[in-house]
Image (cartoon, rainbow, N blue to C red; front, side, top):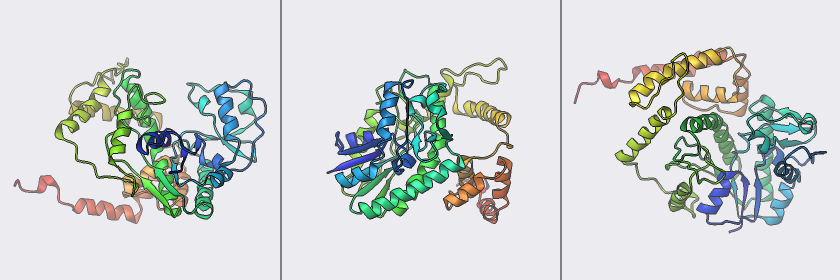
Length: 375
């Protein structure tokens, strides 16, 4: 099969392990959708202050030849993931667009360089960022339908994992990485579903099996870098004819207990003890973890953020899911709610909606387990 991919580690590992095709005929690695569908080549100028790896990737991305190469190769299958789109900001010179250099993102404090001073940075999750991505996704969907209607498009919608089985990183550090990716995951989900609804030959692929990372994961341990054993499990369950995973067997009680214990232990093995004593070692029972952790997290959220800061697209998406039980019906709705003045206004707007009142009344009318007589 003639296979190509657009994406990052998910697509690369999926093709290698699950499709058993180590050398795809065409790849666009770590290129955001906006840059992918933008034909305008940028004048990058002097890049001598950047690392060789960074210079190579910028030059590679700046070729802007996605449409041309896809027509030439005409793949049978295109594997897509949106990890790059939910990771980084955009750069623009006023005419063209590129991804913010990944190699600079990876540094703890990206240096201010004369190279970056030549461009405007469009922050991740900003209204302009979302608008540009929607336009790029529309171009991508139209191109696949018109230029390559027979090419099957497989959109990967895998989730970050909290389960770390290694020693190179502390569990606290790994959980911070997991929380960061979990905050971005709703945008990946929305982008995948947006394209799957518009590309005639597209399939959105979710995975419900166990996922974990370890020290041998390619590109290092991280919540979106799965262990090789995870990909082997996927390969066993993948149905190549229907491009879907076979139903998973329910986990055993032993496996569920082990996952729960690992989750609780991760908070306790290296939990810091602050001077105010609010954080304590939490390697105890699950009830103790929840009793100690939830009030502290709520206090930190109120102290650091409160309800007066402006919402972003992730806030708006999560508000719909938690309060109304569904995602926003459109990008326009998402952007309108993300433009409200603060989080309190977002909360009040949704909680006073008729849909919320109906849902809340239905929840109150459901019989409680405690109200039922013992059987």
